Structures are given as C-alpha cells and as structure tokens.
Amino acid sequence: MRPVTAWSSRLLRHGPLAPETHQIFANWRFEDDADTNLRRGTQGHFGTRGWEEVVRTSVGVRVRDFARIAPLVRLAQGKVSFDDWRDCLRLWLVATEEPFGTFVRDWLFGERLEGRGRVAAGDVRSFVDAAWAGAGKAPPTDDGRVRAARDLIKTATDLGLLHPGSTTRDIASPGMGDVALVFHVHLVAQFEGSAARVVDSPYWRSALMRPDDVHAALLRLHQFRKLDYQVAGSLVQLSLPYRDATACAEAMAT
View (cartoon, helix red, strand yellow):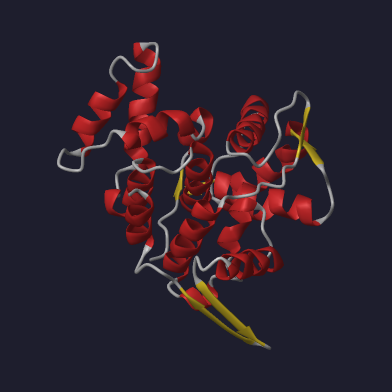
C-alpha cells in the first residue's frame, strides 16, 4: 500500500497540529462519520471559532482517505504516549504531504548526513524554489519564499526533528520508544509492500534514520522479543508480530 501524496501549501502553513489532532483522534467514534467526529472534536475545544475552523478543515483533509489513516486514530486511543504518537504522525505526514515530505527525506536528511548541525530559514529558500519548480507550481514571490521556508522549519520543529530556537535551529537526533518503532516497522512495511524492504526504506528518513540505524533498532527489538529479525551474512529475514499497521495499533491500544 504505497501512500498517496498530495501537495498543499495550506496544510504546510497551518502545520501538523499534532496536539489538536491527537485530541480529536483520541475521542473518535468509529460508528460516526468523519464530519460528525470533526464537529464534536472541535466545537468549544480550541479557543476561538476561527482556530476551530482551521483545525476542523486541516484534520478533515487528512482523514479523507480514512481507511489509510485509521491506524493513527486507533493508536491515539490507547495507552501510547503523546510523543510516541507524534512520531508516528510524523511518519505519516512525511509519506503523504508535500512539500514537507521531500524537505525531510531529501533536504534535512541530507544536511544531517553532511554533518551540518544547524539550519536556518534562509538556508531553505533554495529548496523552496526547487521544490515549487519540480512540482510544476508557479515560482513563489519573495514573501512567499520566506514564508514557506519558515513553515518548513516550524513544522519540522513541531514534529521533533529540530530543536526550538530563534534564528537557527539545531538538528535533533530523534529517538523513538519501542511502541513507536514497532508501529513504524509495520507501517513502513505496508508502504513498501514487503517486510523485506523495511530496512532500506527511505521512509525512515522521517526520523532522520539511516539503514544502519534501522538495523540497530531492529536488532534491539528482536533482543526484547518485540519482533523477529534474523541476519546471517547478506541474508535478512524480518517477521512482524501483527498482520498490518491497524492490527498493530489495535494491540497497542489495549
């Protein structure tokens, strides 16, 4: 199940809305439709009617293909910490939303590989020009370029990839708990269509992880019997404890 990607400057402008989304998902009733859940989840909960509308509209876009995002809803309803859940949301957003996904997978990951420890909005402006051109979008205005660069930096900060700061932001080394890691493995396997492609998947770049980092994480999960990961020379076999990400989330929610 390859993720369906979509370009949205509007979603980038409003950011990931992780706390707001978690609150809505935690109280989601699967027997009700999305509109009912979104109205109930936003009315009177977010300060002003204007912000309620922003949250309702943005989360509404993200739940249009509900069957795909349902594992994140299930995960929010269990005993999973907010930080673990936010890390799983980050994987989803990097996989499905542009230009943020390309920014993380290619630009920010590349900066970290090259040993750069800090980034600033000014560094991102060339990426904005290239990303807009690559997507066939009209070139941004000077103000639009500055705003997009700031939005990319802010979204990465909100999702734990950059440390908060003023002019410059330090690149984080985001660590994940075992719950988030096991969920990542299942969702990445779905994205790739095979557990055999999990280790080398570029979707791990959502956590700034290289294949060596993934390998080490899987060995640790195997050691603690969270999954089965066998390595013999160049032969690798990964067996997952649940049939898919939804089953994984349901098990973690109990």
